[in-house]
Image (tube, rainbow, N blue to C red):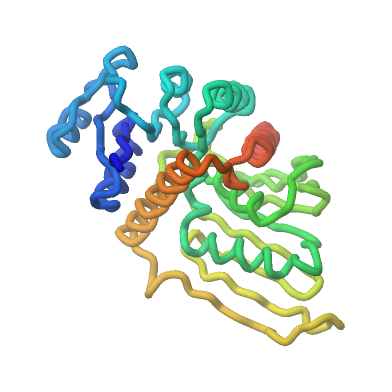
Length: 315
């Protein structure tokens, strides 16, 4: 069977997709890079010995899927890729009206279109989601608390949506502002939720990894039997049993460490590259098996995008 031929679009964050394809070994074939032709793009095409394409019109017919990491400026390119019959893994965040257009175009062409929420595939987030499902089998969540930044909000909502059965209906209102944090309360999928969001001066998110961000992401899910906490992007995941509960409390406490030792920038980058590879592999399975993963259904994607927009309007 021929190896899937992958096009990487964009060379800023797109570099991590190049690393992910390299990590996969002989599983994929890098077909080229679509970029504007910056010094960085030229350097990367030389390093990986692949052609640089500067426009959709330059692309050859033999491309199976594309990893699109071009930000807002590349949304028309993504629609163009779908028009050419190319399956797409699109970097977040995505706005609802554009997302709807992309989903409709993909469906009309029989293509797979995924949005890479990214952080949900990190080890700690996967553990949190799994434990949420376990805790909610008999007793649904009673409340949620989220602390994160404006930049990480979309990814955090993707994690929460994977942990909950639904988002609708949702309603939010800002209740206090103390620069740089805004506190928002509301209901998400009939569950009370509080957000403590760090925003950027001027309303424009800071660059990824900027030291001006004071937090990464913390998610708390309360159940009748106890409280489950994802303490940071690297974990740990902590369960504290409600000792006042008359329900089963046999597992009173666990701490699940998802990384060996303290998190470093190098380790986090390795995890993020592995998460991108997992996203590519999920798209490949969807293409081959013609099955849409639960986290890539239109309902999931549109709910996350809609909640993100509603919260962003309050920052």
